[in-house]
Length: 364
Image (cartoon, rainbow, N blue to C red; front, side):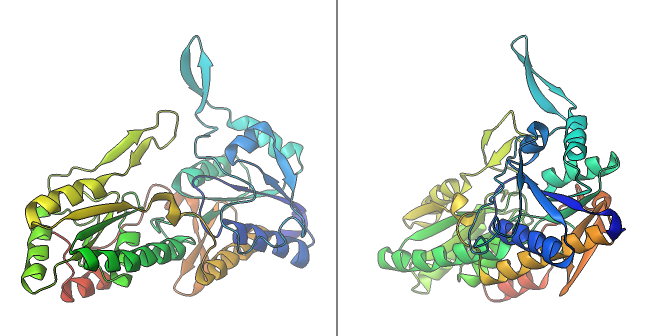
């Protein structure tokens, strides 16, 4: 298969994530230095694929980008070419324009595509593979919720940022005898909240996989107060839900393939705990700080492995697959088996049970 591959295209889609640039760098350097390939990139994700916005990716283009956050190819999370929005007679209609992307791939003489993204981006990648495009996917999300891979790059950086925030919140919480609530990202998975909560010494962790009773969280805080610990640290995942099943939606973005925007539960939890526990409470929403800035060394190494492994899949003809990390080995899984099977925290996993054994309250 390798003799038939002369030129590959790369694109990044969905939300930005620490480690995207190291993936691009590793893929470009492996393609050029090991296999003598030509590499190009599509700007702004599927938007660039639709508008044929192509840039060359040579060694100079990726020089110095290893420690830089974001993506030199830019990104978009609103462009699904299988349901692309158009205005007709004052109304928004959605059309399948995916064939335009296929034609642009052919027009540029691209033999294979490396598509870096999360579930939404890789869903379109799978659909392009079904149309005959040679596709290799690379999993990208700080949420660590993609199926079939142990870890996604960006997760370690997000946890490190959240852990540092908790270190800082500890000092101000202790100074004022307050409850400090930190809201972190993760959507419908609690990986960031769980890992950061353990790393940052939280007293309570609220994750989507364990619906909470706010009274149990308040009782745990009151017990701490009775023991002389007059402050508490609570980490809440943005997708945490109560026993009644309620989640907090901050807004709905109608023109996005994934319109639900979570957020704001931190303030709700802080208000409830202040009333129930009798301590002043403050909420901090970490937000996009978790997605920005330089990746950690662990994420740089993992991203580099993903980028290089993607090229190896291309050159071995293993198309329609996503690169995965299984234990300490790079592997791959079919995109057909990955899409729509997001990986949440197992409530019975060792991390959760360990945390509970150490007195961390989950409110379940």
